[in-house]
Image (cartoon, rainbow, N blue to C red; front, side):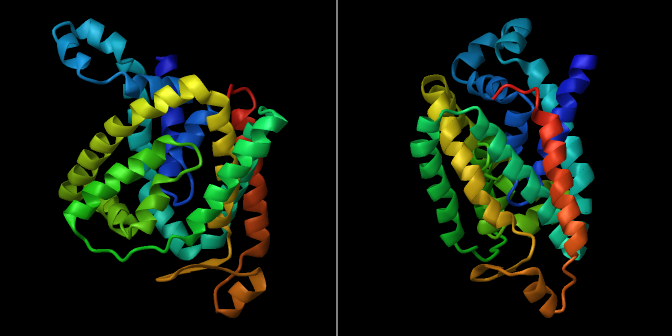
Amino acid sequence: MSLFFSRAWRGLLMGLAEVVPGVSGGTMALLTGIYRELVQALASFGAESLGLLRSPPAFIKHHNLGFLASLATGMAFGIVLFARLMKYLLENYPPPVWAFFFGVIVVSAVLVASKRSVKTLTFWGVAGLGLGLAMLLIPPLGNTGSLLVVFFGGAIAVCAWILPAVSGSYMLLLLGLYEQIIIAISEFDLLVLAVLGAGCVVGLMSFVRLLNLLLRSYYEQIMGLLCGFMLGSTINLWPWRVIGDAGSSWLTPSEYAALGRPDFLLVSLLACLLGGIGLWLLARRSDF
């Protein structure tokens, strides 16, 4: 039972991360020490799984279903419990929310970088930083409301979910689907959620085996790349920004306040500090 809860609270953190655009559930998995196990468990599904169905104990063991079930339970609770809260906070207190996760991701990047060599960071880290900054050039699309777009959005977002530093919610935001999905979760719109889930399954099964192969063969290089990507993605979490049809505008606190919006400067600085310290305490014993 203690093992179940140990995994479930990690899943809860992943679920919480995924309702915030710009924060990755994969980052939480990496920094809580379960990333490799998660990728290996997901990559174990394939054509051979059908043959194992004749022996349920073998099927459960081969796919590490105990681990996946406890993690999924925590994630489901995290998403359901925090979706409405996060929607409220982002609507009414956006700077402190973004500042908190800004601190989380900056400290995440520093922790991952601290375990990589200078050579790895010089090439792969810089390449990842460039990719992270390039994400800023992608303008958000309008919300079409189409279930087909929701399906493909789920497939794309779940690939981002499994990668540290790449936010599934941010991909939904770019696709114009974030608000629709948050509303569907908070209102239990089963049709939209089912279509999203189907897209997630297809996307994950198509991508995770490739990721598992890359991690086995090029782990340090991938970690260096993701470290730079995390650092580049922090710009998407800048607390004082305005999101419009053409993308985001990054403002100073005073410019933000001049628009008639409270800047919450002191609260945001405290939230950033708490996010960074909390992440450091969470990840200090993890192996990544």
